[in-house]
Image (cartoon, rainbow, N blue to C red; front, top):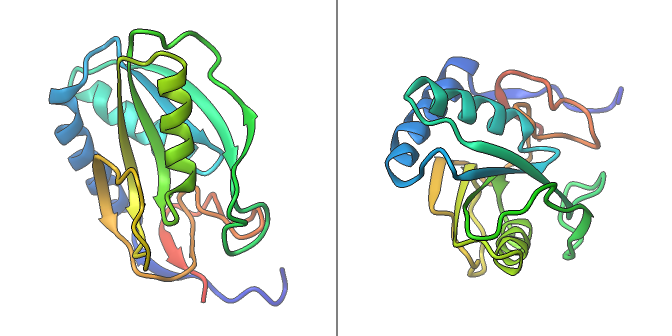
Length: 176
């Protein structure tokens, strides 16, 4: 990664945490402790961990699960298809599911996660993304909760990566 550009901070860690706390306050009234928060791996893990802790701080202790989907591989743009590497680990039949993802761009991963949750019998599926990038084409479904309207730049940090690297940065940065 010697030729990787230096990341430019767009959202410092403190602002990331403020956005997460705001999302938790908006989500808490429409879920309950039986809700299954399902993170989309691997990028959504950082956001999901912070969001579930923020929900817990305000008295909402959700269940937790994960879906492992991939549309990027190590590329900087979506391959236009979704690979499912791991499905839900427990039954979600009859439960409200909150799909948690890091960034919404093409909408393919979120749409596939919603489809899977509905096929598994979820009573309701809500979606939350930390960042929503602009996109020239209509996307369905649009997320129910969005933390930050991101610029159309290649983002890293806070779970977002460049070929698997830079996910652990505490800030959200641009790499362009």
